[in-house]
Image 1 (cartoon, helix red, strand yellow):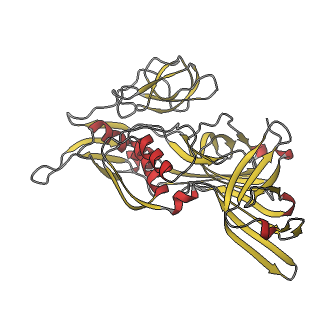
Image 2: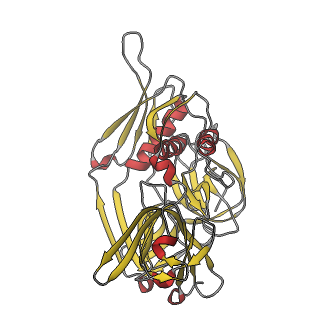
Image 3: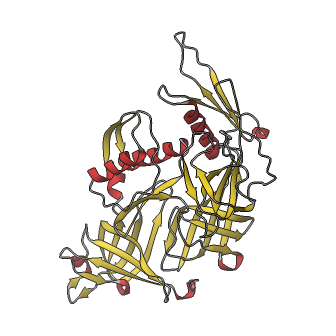
Length: 421
């Protein structure tokens, strides 16, 4: 357990010759953030532009210099928490002295600022597509831990590379793969599942400053129709219907199955629309003392305000001056959906188990699947405690979605009836 009262920071800059300088004593307004719709970490600071034995700071720190932010709790935790290359360099002279303001971004900023025209033929895997982009732009990589769905034909014109990667990851989810994120750490890029952090921090009333929660149904989707390809007369048939929270009325979206897309894939994509849009939109913001080791995509546990449960961090801002942070969270559980269809579709099987979403269960071990459909890819999973996060998937063959809650198990996917109690 870390002691938040002992958190300290240091900032190291590397000049053009590779020499490193600890400049923390010159700095104020130090902070870094990971925003919801960006893949790069943004950090910033203001420094006294004092003259040192090596010259003024503005002659040491220049555009393109590498800046690293480190944090320690005075005990076992001492690590780099953010890094970036100076993009905005702004010395300011005033009557009270001179300052140097810098804004920095990590390696992934190149992808946010670069456009490309790309074509992926049908059947291209997520891994091959994303790693090809990273290789072409000389982005250092860690081992790939992301999805590897087979995508349909895709063409991107004048698209930013960061948007292409996010769209590939999103399309993989629609095909039954795990939700994954892209982020950089210590100069290397990783594609990894959301919530893959080994340490899950718990936030209670006594260690949070405020919890703000709001809910809205303004963008709610309660039904998705899967439409087939048009015939020679231009008519399209309804191949499946997925229903969500229809007690709020029918708010319908149409999903048109691609020419090279199976019905199972189309239904999986439609269910993902319900997973994303088929719930009351909850906005949860938590302010607390800074835990500098928390990143976007991490899993946290909240026991404060009106909320309790596991949440993913979808955006985070760290403020080193006030030793505080603000997290924007998204809930990990989704409401269950049911499906109905014509002879080409399938209806979710009703489980004989009496368990409900949110229950903690004892998983016996065996296989977890990337989706609930009968032909879904499966992987071995260890026994242990797990939480039910979804039930009665549209495919129905593997009707329960479990996420492990301890380090003993690694289950994170759809499982069969009778595999837990």
